[in-house]
Length: 236
Image (cartoon, rainbow, N blue to C red):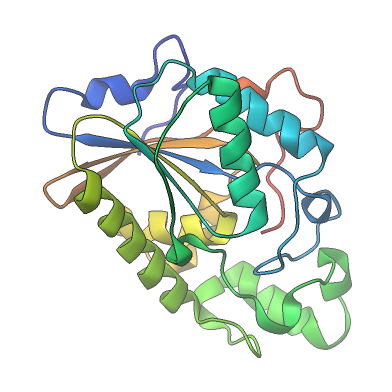
């Protein structure tokens, strides 16, 4: 993995063009009120807040002029709204595919709870175990993290095989779902999940070629630099 600034000028996906690679520009959705509150969101369908909408528009300005062939989004409202604002701001008219398997990890009984409320009481031991190894715990009512990873990886494979190189594809998704997939793409265990915490509306650049994946850029936030409070990794 390498990090860097993929923005205009000098978007890092350009290094993938012309050599059989398909660039995927993958973004986390913009901020929601629940993210600002540090609330566990998961499958709860919440909209962007005002800052989240500004973040999405900033991302759109960053991506203006990129020769995308298509765009894909999770079905959850915060991802779809992010994509709509990006396309509007970038003045892009693209075919849009809603991909159910890009949805966020289902967090079971934790959904809707504030992170600070998990520090004590019945969820405290679960919270500490999560910090040590997210893949090791069982949350009542939650999707197994390995299952989340498998479906998001399958969704990404479906996207690249449907579209193919060389023109980029834009993808909008979620924190834990994308982090679990990134672990898989680079061959790391799910215990490394917390190494892949991204800011809202951050941009990742991935490359795919004949079954091989590259993570070129992770958590790029150059486009958010002028927005107060934007660059802070948040709750899922």
